[in-house]
Image (cartoon, rainbow, N blue to C red):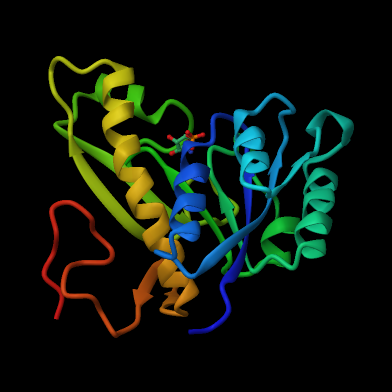
Length: 221
Ligand code: GRF
């Protein structure tokens, strides 16, 4: 098997997706290793999670920078220092600039708690409930300069019930996030992802159940 790919994870908060990625790496379910975690918030619990696993946990305060680009340049310098090959945004509450995207072409992913292109932006679960959808879910996508607008890699669907609160729907979606983000990373690690326009192609060998749609499973050739 080839060497594990080196992942840098950008966070701002709790870091449950980070935890899932770390766990999948440590158990060998994905051929990757989280080599650094960078937060724009000093108090992010995600940093503590990284430290517990002996992973470099770095705080870069966005308030110390006069522009989005200069903040991103500082982050890029750290990612390059750690020889990162894939940048995973996991609850990172900032829009990234071309400084980051140009440094890691086709190698910046994000997870969003809605079935994009529906409900981009913040508080997606609340947006979905207020709209009255019956099905919501989550999306792993490559990042572009827009807000949650990049090419879609994997999605998972969950029901939305009349009785749901923002919190209950978020919890149901989060359980799926923890499955599909590691899957997308593994596809990347296997070199199976390519982008054509808006479309992400998943190269064979395809798994017997869908790699791109978690729930309900689709039939792949
Ligand atoms: C997740 O819902 C993710 O989809 C969104 O921010 C949240 C982060 O949660 N981008 P956590 O910090 O990974 O627990």
